[in-house]
Image 1 (tube, helix red, strand yellow):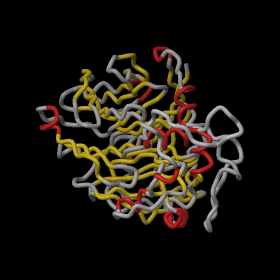
Image 2: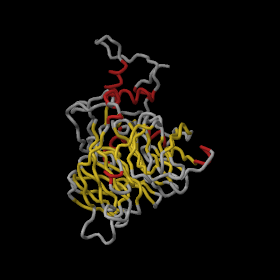
Image 3: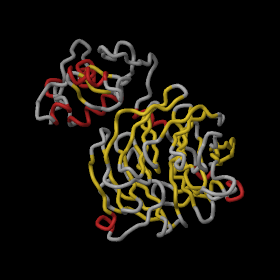
Length: 395
């Protein structure tokens, strides 16, 4: 099939409204095709005002031109429209010349931006059996102004800051990489899930059937005027760059949302796998395959399934609770035995990464942060319920 010409690319927001309007740009971050009015609106919106809009004509002609440098006439290829839309963005370098400016201010990087393809190519990791975790820092989340005992139900690295969910005090607390307290922001409901989105943005979810968007600005956390509805209260959430994967622990279900927060699918475990699963506290979705990995508490293991809900494998792992990815492998909290374990993405056990002696207490949440770091929080009660431990992972 011949690849589409620029004139055949239609604005996606307009298409949803039943209008066929030619697209002029594509958002580098969202991969969304936009006409001129929607482009202007995109860069005025609070959620997307710092995105980069790429003019379609310049790059589609480059990506489909013949080897003859004297012509820029597009030629037919075997790729379809979706593949071409994705592929050409992966080769774009963001500079002053390549970004289309509108009335809003756009933050433009004048150096090369690593493409998704380059990231996949250069993400060859060393033998995971050689990975070692060394505790480099531990800090308390307690503050003098806290009215209740601190109960940490999530931790996340956003840029060079550490965001901590203090559920009982209903606060998002912000720290630097040295554990120095910066500020607090009021949560909108009791929160059990937190995940990184992009740049300085992240989302939270919890008992209120709503996913909320936040931004770290300087030394504060700002609530954005954007939220997504889900059917049931959430106990874990992960964004893989394409989809939000939301875990409903007590409802034995998983909700998949797209980038704009629209529900793509709801997986009912009884229907998908023929049995109920008592999930752990978190969920992970692979960025390349969209496979979903869920710790299962009562079943003592980790379940892997496709985005359609088809079970692929189950690996026994005593009282699996939290999950994250590091160095291309899955790191899990083994709650009863107080371990952090590593398994491959096809379910093969690798090794114990952190043992009981090093942890010192029951771990509850684990998050992979920047610079190959793991952030670990603990069960409520005792002397560590308000602590965050940071481990450096090396080969």
